[in-house]
Amino acid sequence: MIINYSHLEVKPGHEEEFLEACKLVLKGARANEGNINYNLVKVFGEENTYKAVGFWRDAEIYDAHLASDYVADYMKKSTEFLSAPIMKEVIRGENR
Image (tube, rainbow, N blue to C red; front, side, top):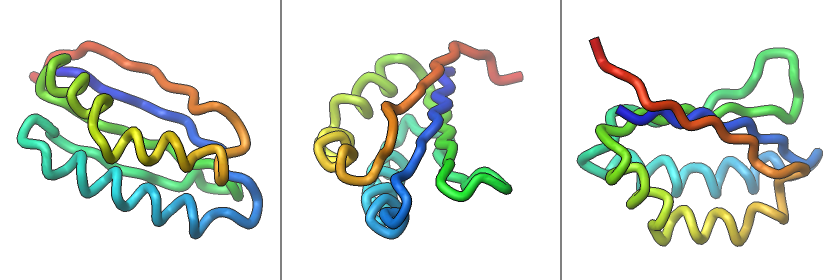
């Protein structure tokens, strides 16, 4: 199993634009048969900070997600609403 944990900083005043773009990524990821779970959460007490956490069956499925059109579209738009580069941690784990 692959676990992706991303830290996202949103520019003030661009939260709605960010959330709309995230909806498309979440929809695309969740439609992938190898996606176990994928969620976006707002960090409590931090106005413009979000975390995205995804669980993928294997590295091949995760790599296909990264190469998808919906991720490419998101990355093109992200400079408009993100205030910092995405900080990402990818972990290979075991489901027990």
